[in-house]
Structure formats: structure tokens, C-alpha cells
Length: 286
Image 1 (cartoon, rainbow, N blue to C red):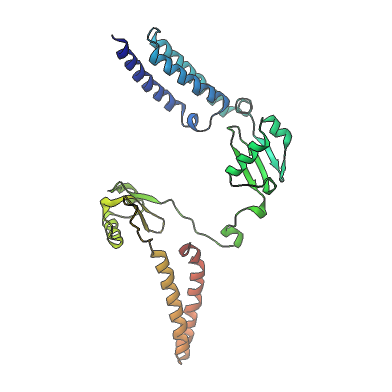
Image 2: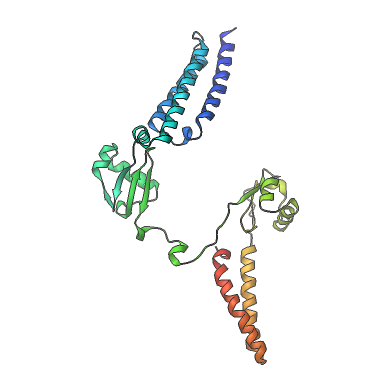
């Protein structure tokens, strides 16, 4: 067999084996690497390259070596799941870098992190003053997570005592101009509804790059042509306006009638409707 054919064959074999072994190791191997997983990743890549190019070596020995590394890695992961001491030894522990706005220099030295590198990590979290940080910790994978002091945290509806209803994730119902039936069914919708909504927007299905439906049944579309602006859905705003109009009409009827029973009825209907509007306002105006 010519060497170039053998190299192609070895490379394709290495790709298939490496893919299978990586799937066996799981997603963590490509997301959050511990020290051992970092070493394993480098070694497996080097072994795969050797299997591909070393035509003088015995290829199956490389496959055996790859398998051993993967088995050892699986064994380490199993040990970490069963033992906290093993996790602390292999992955190391988290290190507190800032506490109550004070940088802990000794811990920085322990992690071999300079003050400039720490400030860079903080800027990556949109924090530009170390004194605003209540707590900053370096995780075993090297990420720095930050908790701001309460007075520096972004204002949320809960701080204002406003209740906000839960919102499920949007469903992508159109991709590359093609309808996705499963997400449509998840929202309880059908193709006829999509075509109706697209007609309202004046958009053809084949011109839609991405289409999503939110928890309120509003369709948002992104077109292939970036120069065309599609109007935002107005269902929530329209519903809020209709509720406000109904409440205003009840108040007007109450003021315009001289019949006591009717005046009382309109007033009694207006008060609970006003409360309903107040309750749903965060949902319809956000």
C-alpha cells in the first residue's frame, strides 16, 4: 500500500476512534477542564496525530494507548463523583480573591495571579471597581465569578416589589425558510397560524432566515435581507391598550349616567378591572 494511502487510512481511523472516545468521555471534557483532563486532552490529541503519520509504527498499539488513556480518565471521573477528597485533590478547591471589597493578596499569590490580571477578569464581568465587589472567587477551571455588593447590583422587579410572571423559552419555528413542525406543536400552533402571521407582516416564508415564537404567541422574524425592517409584534401592547380603554369606558359610563344602579354597577366593574390591569402591566409592557 502506498504511504499516502496508508496515511489517509490511518487519519480517518484516528478521527473515527477519537470521536467515539471523546463522546464516551462526555461533554465535560470539552467544557470545564480539570488539570488531569487538560493533560488527557493534550495527550489524546498527540496520540491521534502519531497514529495518523507514523507509518513505521504499529497502528493498533496507538489505538490501545488511546483506549487506556480514556479508561483512566473515566476512572478518575468516577472517583471524583464518589469522593470529595478526590475532587479537591484532582481539581483543587475554589480560591477567594476578593472579600467585602478587599483584595486578598496572599490568595492572588497562591494562584499566581497578578493584580492586573485580576482587574482584567473583573472587567470581563463588567466590574470596573474592586471596591464594589462583595465576593470574588476563582473556580477550579480558572474562571473568576463575582458577586457585587447589594447596593451595586442591577435593579430588578423583585427589588421594586413587582411580580413578574414566568416566561418559557422561545420556540424556533422557522429556520432557513422552512417550517419546524415540532416547535410549532410545542406552542400549540400550526402551519396555518404561521402563514397568517407572515401575511400580517407582509413577509414570504422563503425570505425568513430565523423565526421564533415567544411565550405570549408573538412571532419574531429575521429576514435574509438585512435592509428590510420588519415591524415588532404588537399583540401585548394592543391587549394592554384595549384593557385600558375598557376601564376608561366604564368610568365614563359611570360619570355620564344618572341612574344610580347603573352608576354603581359601572364603578364596581371598573375597580377590579383596574386591579387586573395593574397585575398584568409588567407582562404586557416589558
